[in-house]
Length: 311
Image 1 (tube, rainbow, N blue to C red):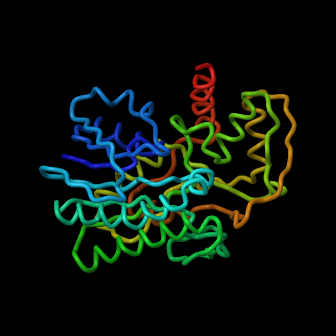
Image 2 (tube, rainbow, N blue to C red):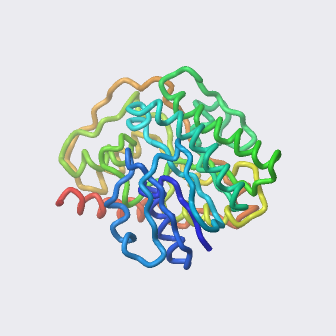
């Protein structure tokens, strides 16, 4: 098989490139590296069957030859990144999704869209089920990401219904593991980086807001399973083990052994108060659920960040 992955130099994208190479696919990685990293691809760049194309998928891309699978993972994905690149985030979610769907249509390829739990906004339903339409501020500071992904889901379903493209949509909840950037602004690298550098841990609000963290290998397994189904509507993938941000800060402090205080700062605008996936559908359709518990996943992630900080 020949598989094209946009955003392949990113955190999740690079793990997907590796997984498909391991399964014997030719892999075409497309990335413009505004948030991705060539370093993430160092283990892959000289492997047989791997091709890297430096390209902004917001502009059309022609790829000669057959393609069996198109996975669209290109997008800034952390608040720091999409607040720094709001126009690019909107363009890759709209024009980029349009371009990759057109490529899948032309090649008669399977298509998988990386969507996000952010389509639920600051949810009024808990835990979040796929049937929930969400509570999103379309003109708030996070709207560039939330609405880009909501549009991406809409055009993906339109291509399926109007053109018969074999589409799939994964709604990704907080994922972590090696190849995350320490400066990407998400809570786990923030806490881990601060703890390992001996800095105070920064908690926004009172820390009562919740998140649910899924280790990257579990997510990748679910994505691969979803790609090869005949199911076309969105599917949540995440770990339903919920924890408050304050509890999480204390967990990171204990894991790293850091003797640092926790400091509190104002909660950012439109920050979700709760986040927990209902994975009933993933269990039923894919036979999937997370295998890596948070303690083991955090240990592996800490070891990665320790190596990064040592240089």
